[in-house]
Length: 263
Image (cartoon, one colour):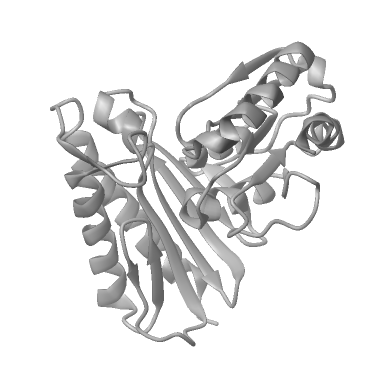
């Protein structure tokens, strides 16, 4: 395995360059296309930012596999290193001029997370997690909160694109609204998870996600001392479409609420 610092430097540079592109074109009004439905958007800047990131990675590591939101690049099916990229996590926010979206870049080695980078270019906040090395925000160490009960907690979520899942999710929303101090929805799963890692929120759950939505941020949460599982508390599978992340102290309580409405 190569020195992680080489990968970290590349990922941060790619995130900054993509972020600069997005920041300079923010609030200019963007034409967008629909993907799976009227809530699932893609803009020209999703593609341009993705092309920029992929180009930088392929220039340095042409043998690596790359999985992206707008298209996949697989130089070899057996490549042990895989980059997982979301050029704009929170495209709808970006398209509407709502300043909560992020560039998300993760590196995995044989399915093990090595590096996660989440960058919000509007607020110039760079969240980084390195396997076994902790998590940082703009170079300073971060840790999850110490909140111990749901009644004291700020919990975040996101709403699914799949309309069939909305009734279930609304039922969960109502239950958590009654049991937590407050609920929030940012519209960017990567950013929500990064905020949790920084102690700005205490728990987060979501359905109907893709690997690139959470690949980087789940490592940042873990390296900040948080806990990440599926909604039943089992080992997280990036391809399962669901995630539960907390500061660790309210994890079991959140599972109880989720399981009460799941079946």
